Length: 165
Image (cartoon, rainbow, N blue to C red):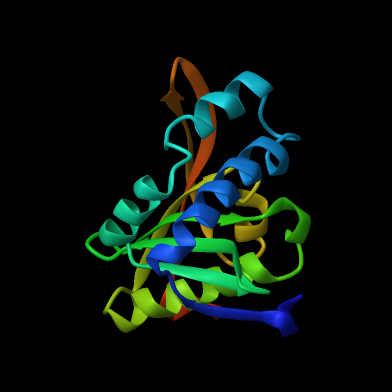
């Protein structure tokens, strides 16, 4: 999969795919960690429309993984806070290195922007993988989404101490 994937900045044409990646990553990919009600509430946070995702592209520099002409994963960065805003991969191509590569490239971009520490609020799906890559868990927190409480982990990566790959 990685050999057929191109990593690049998001374009407005990627927005419909981003909406679908987001929805399916939550509804299918997070099924083992969150209840159906929690996943439905989480997925409802953002509209499943291209317009919503084009607007997000304007707020957050977004890196996409493109395979066969479609966005199959993406990572948004918050440049004002030195933070990874989101990281989602289409469930059928998860665990093939796309998310790791998106994350590494995004952390590198934040490092290039002068950040020595990068933070993320990671889902219970993502947190174990990050911990295995040198990210420090700061605390577990619960966030409310449409009346449902979802657990997530506040984590950080200090660049001087770790290899971002």
